[in-house]
Length: 279
Ligand code: PAF
Image 1 (cartoon, rainbow, N blue to C red):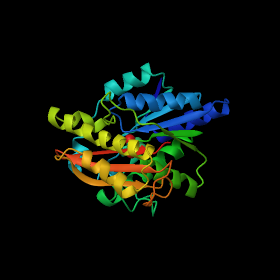
Image 2: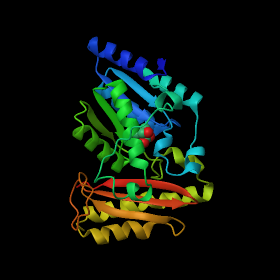
Image 3: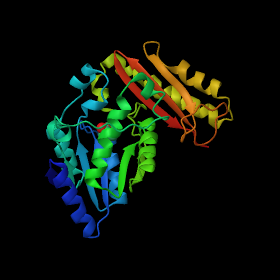
């Protein structure tokens, strides 16, 4: 596995692989890799011959300094996971090389970023779109893989590549869950035993709503409410909302393909999850 630290090295490596006829995939991450990331890597390997994983804890997308300071960093484990997963190259830029002192550009997607995570975490999405633009530019991948857990992020990034004509196929990989349903997240390690137990009620609510949908309920207020009510009292809910998967606009009647978005905070730890309605 090659480890590269600068955008130039990454760009040279990717172009040489593409010239050699290989299909290149990028899996952008902020490290603290877990089974969810392994599954992103696996999906990338099904689509491409040469898989690059990037690890960069992107300060720009944290609207809260404490969240950035406490974000888990497990570099040695991450490198081992990438090696054992058969990753072809790892891109680990330093902060200085990603954002030198002279850095002064910001990439913004309007519309889709106004609500949900965008409303609750001002500046978050411009941080994400700025760093992902840099990562896509440097690695010039044929495909890029992101997790469904960050559903709004995926919708925003899909809009970014459409609007800027970035020639990359965007692939969304399904959310990986613990046995009890909790969506895997690097932030889960910060949950204590009690919060961890209560956090399960989030996915229980989402699945309850899905079951109602599958039994014929279409009224989104009823479906939203069902998910909300299942949540443990200790979870401060930010939003529970069924939206159209492309526009992220509210819908009054749910259809197959719509998505139920959730965000809430437990013991100061923000958790997000979602479920796509299936027949
Ligand atoms: O989803 C993430 O881990 C991050 O938002 C991403 C896409 C790697 C950008 O920093």
